[in-house]
Length: 360
Ligand code: HOC
Image 1 (cartoon, rainbow, N blue to C red):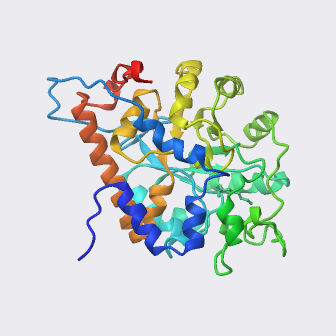
Image 2: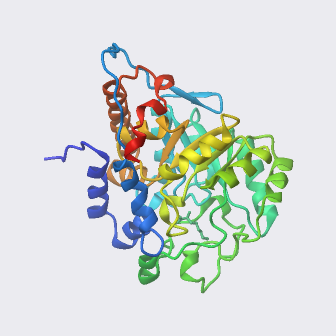
């Protein structure tokens, strides 16, 4: 009999059983001892809620907005690489699922379908594009113009990969993108090094620019009129700099714990950032979301929206588009239920009063 999927970890179990070991290890990877990766989840379990009662929760509305666009609930898809490793239609399936559910899909630079294929697969989807800055700025420039012309609605500048984190199992497995898959967005653009180091995954090597700095935000602004959202901020100091540099949003992220091990869980870093930003720009978060009550806690602490990375990949591994839809649907159902049980009828009613600070 088919296994009934009840919660997100059911998809994790399925993916672990069905993906190749090297693929599973790549997606599961955290840096070094995986302290930060694991703390992303555990931190939610330390937070307790203060539910309100007798507030007529017969009708509940999970809709919200990001950058002025309505989405069905405050959960989108974080950028993760190489979706064709998990499902043959790869990012096209992810795009269709997010279009069907009406939420935001942040397409990874390292997609195994091109941005043109992704947009054609789900023409009405709401999408942002995750951007890295390359040593060869022309490469970044070209992709910015391409995604702008394709109707992407924001650029998510990822700033926490001056170098790739040390992921032990990837090194042991000598993980590489298999030869039948390509980083389609850059087909023919990068030279693929013959003997790329393990940290380069056999894909465009020697390309990310470790010298990027705040002035590159101005460079990016000079290229595009799209909103710029910085992904990878974990401190109030950098949040303030982001606001001062005129960006439109921040994603509090530690790259799923795959970069600096020992950094904070994102939910623990969120409050100082929200306090600093004071509503001047939107603050989002990714990392460790596994249940609807995790979403509720993050929104209560000031995240306008959260993004799921690995759970979407598990959904893909389970059943492609349908699997990703199921993951989002389960999370939506759980969020709606947690909201109601906490006495909130809509997202606007979720605030810090829901959090029991004496427990923190
Ligand atoms: C060329 C190296 O986001 C991950 C990716 C890291 C991208 C590095 C690519 O696996 O977390």
